[in-house]
Image 1 (cartoon, rainbow, N blue to C red):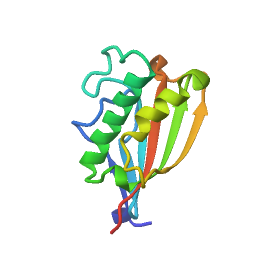
Image 2: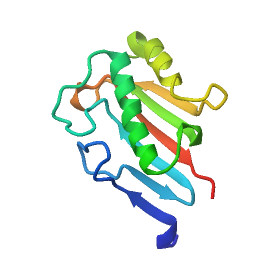
Image 3: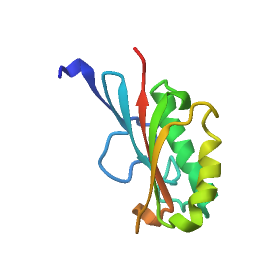
Image 4: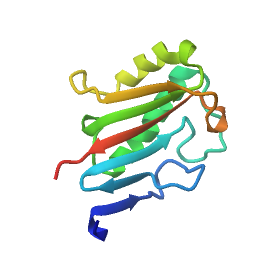
Length: 134
C-alpha cells in the first residue's frame, strides 16, 4: 500500500473527539467513518439530548458533518453499524429517525446490535462505511 492510497482524515471543525481517533480513514475510495455519538459537535462536555429520537438525530448530524468534509453524501454510504443500549425499547424509534436520512431506494446494508454501554451513557452510536467512486 502506498502512502497515496491511505489517508487519515481529522477535521479541526469536525465533531469534537472524546478519544484518540481520526474522523475517517480512506483507502482506495473506501472510507471508514468513526462511530459518532450524540454529543454536541463543538463541545462534548454539554449534556446529550434526551431520548433516542433526539440522540439519533444528533448522531446523524455528526455523521453528516464528517461526510460533508469528505465531500460525499448519504447516497455514498454502503454500510452502517448501529449500537443501542436499550435495544428492545429504542429499536423502532431509532429506525424511523435513521431511515429519514437516506434516499428510500438507497438504504445501506446494516448491522444493529444491543450493547450494555456506550461512552457518556449514550443511547446510540453509529459508524459508516462509504464508497467514493474515482
